[in-house]
Image 1 (cartoon, rainbow, N blue to C red):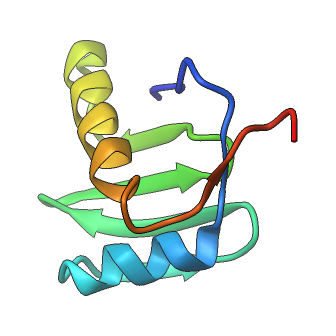
Image 2: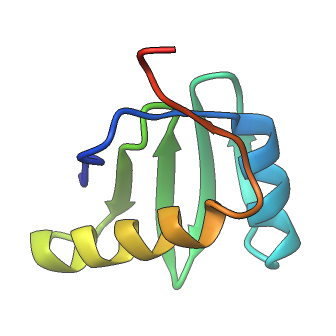
Length: 84
């Protein structure tokens, strides 16, 4: 699991819409997480900016993928600082 260094509060509905628009299959969305398929892996994006790739075990690759995902979502979804 990769954890964002910056506090985040991601709008999960908008995140799911953005993910789906890229052709990635969203299997679950609620106010705490979005689960989708990407490159043969199950990916879970959490509201706080945590990202889990299953079954990926390479921590460095997980951090790389998570950083790329969060940066690609930044223009299209609402990020709020956790502090308000």
